[in-house]
Length: 136
Ligand code: ADP
Image (cartoon, helix red, strand yellow):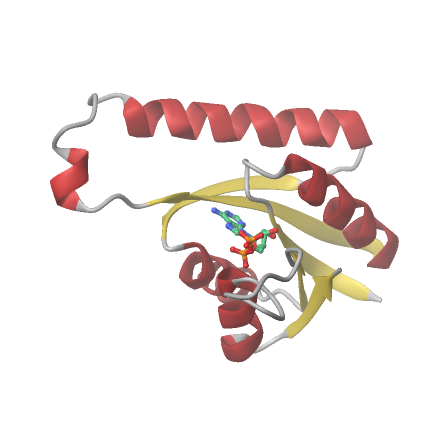
């Protein structure tokens, strides 16, 4: 059904990542491509100054390792991409750059402060130029 699917994974919630990766695989056309994306969040300068210099490098290596193990565990072929910045903005930018026709994003268990979907999913749905599937 879709030729290029962006699967954004929060490395702190790999179980959700696994679920949306499986869903992407089931919706992908033969010859299509999945982009498994994680965004390393930027840190405000006043915080970064007190942190070890290698913290970003460690986060990048950790993210690469986690996405690689997700691919291995599921056996699903995907292009791995790491970006840094604000998650919603980077997810939308990746979708635009790759000409994606679908973004599959996980939502969270609703709570009072964030009732329907999480902040990232909400922003992506609102601003995306391609279809977005919010997995519940
Ligand atoms: P939650 O309250 O569960 O964090 P969010 O809206 O922030 O809700 O996140 C929902 C989904 O957005 C995640 O399951 C994931 O698909 C995507 N997402 C959130 N943060 C990131 C990130 N840093 N990198 C890639 N995807 C992310």
